[in-house]
Figure 1 (tube, rainbow, N blue to C red):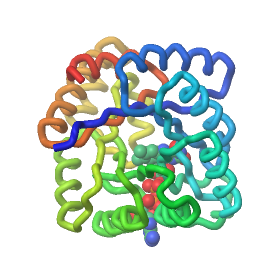
Figure 2: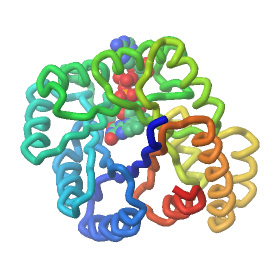
Figure 3: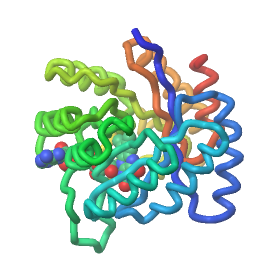
Length: 276
Ligand code: FAD
């Protein structure tokens, strides 16, 4: 078996204060020596410059960086321009996504789905970029069915994705079941679980409802019972997520990708507890 890979995700800060804070977060997390840091890309290209600036800053610190790139609302010319910029800076790794149209925007642009973006990147740039795509063990919320979503995931792999990162989940069986289903379809790329540390229950519940991540009832009730006792939520969340990550790695997951929300503490604690 190849060695497991661990990666860390940030979003591009909006303010100067956020930039300074992210530098501090990065300094702490760089000590963990992840394979790469990825930086998200706002809906409709809204963070295009800030994503690039953050990625270049990470690269400038001698660390590996992968920008996310979403295509909805874009033209081929827009995407080509971004690929050229990334190439000119020696960036060789992209997380390729469809993204979601910002509210109030009706024009979907020239790409409908992420498989078209992957195909376009391969056409334009050959094997220059290592491409990651998104996977949904609990089904993307807009998919017609689980089977359809799986077939759509396969399209992205066939278009040239090298690996996938999943939406976060709190049920390891959903991941194992999804990986089995992918293998049955002949999908052989690494599918790395996306891990969301638990810090704020109200925010997590809101976000999970939007992105289709299930919080099992027992877990939701337990977290709810702490009310605004954040220390207990974090302590219990850490125990729970560590246990799930242990199970994922023992069950053959090819690595873990941590959604940090630009905070270092919980990801560092998880990393240490897992002995990575
Ligand atoms: P797709 O793979 O295109 O799938 C979207 C939906 O369309 C699914 O329901 C799928 O089943 C369906 N579908 C796909 N192809 C077809 C087809 N050919 N025909 C019919 N139906 C099809 N969002 C951001 O805005 N910025 C980010 O930086 C970002 N990073 C992310 C990172 C990860 C690891 C993950 C898991 C998600 C991320 N997202 C990000 C969220 C993502 O953009 C949304 O989940 C979005 O709704 C779907 O993007 P996708 O690339 O999975 O789309």
